[in-house]
Image (spheres, rainbow, N blue to C red):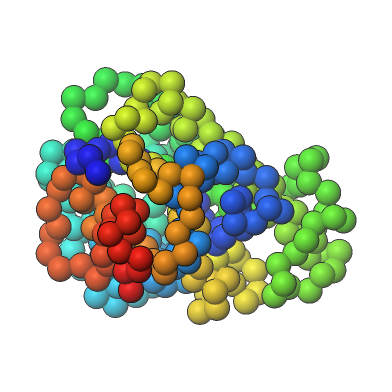
Amino acid sequence: MKQGLNLIYLHTHDTGRYVQPYDPNAVTPNLMRLAREGCVFRSAFCCGPTCSPSRSGLVTGLYPHQNGMYGLAHRGFSLHDYSRHLGSWLRSHGMETVLCGVHHEAADVSSLGYSHVFQEEAPGMSSLEADTRNTEKAVEFLRSPHEKPFFLSLGLHNTHRPFEGIDPGIEPDYVKVPACLPDTDETRRDFAEFLTSAKRADTCFGRVLDCVRELGLEDNTLVFYTTDHGPAFPHMKCTLRDDGIGVSLILKYPGNPMAGKVCDAMVSHLDLYPTLCEAAGVPLPGPVEGRTLFPLLEGSEEKLH
């Protein structure tokens, strides 16, 4: 495993595992491409099935009850120590850290400690337009000169409600709804809108993945995709069912022995903090609850937890 890698964090709102390669019902070819080139974790879980607590675990390596994010950031909750947030911690160790779009980890984005923040949104702007603009900002950053290794976080509004219509290529009558939902016309249409939202997010990620390849960054960059928790449907988000805490996790890095394979070992968002610090060659800020994923990826262990 190389150290000193660039890091690209691609993430969506409220998606769970309802994208390819987990769900063949979804139309997300770019995430499927990432899966074929990276490793798919089949049993990945968040550490809190609501937005801010879940994300806080990933960006601190600590459980929400340890890091202070007991509830939603826009409702007054915050981290005890923002210096260990990934955006701040990696920056303090010589990396250029950039946020494009959604974060949900502080009421004031300046608290997160990123080198640069690009958030294109305005009253009345659709999720699609906001995500497209923020994606273009991410691509613009990738195309700019880099004197230091970087950490780029691209956060999308999709697949968060409210949904915005149904793609012509997705026919509600033939949509298979999740088993925990009633198979009715209303639910099929609602889930078709969710699948449309996932397709739109995937298009944005495709722009970034294409850019990474075009610029020759694949040889020194770790790219991963995940989401905060399950979708906003009954028995999913805000519950401790698998559909509430189960998340997608796809990770790609140069020389990965698990490229194109799946890993069934149970892993957590908490494991990403030590993994990313190791990939970047950056020390940990102190004890963390997760364990680096590299023993699984490189075959020295079959399970972490």
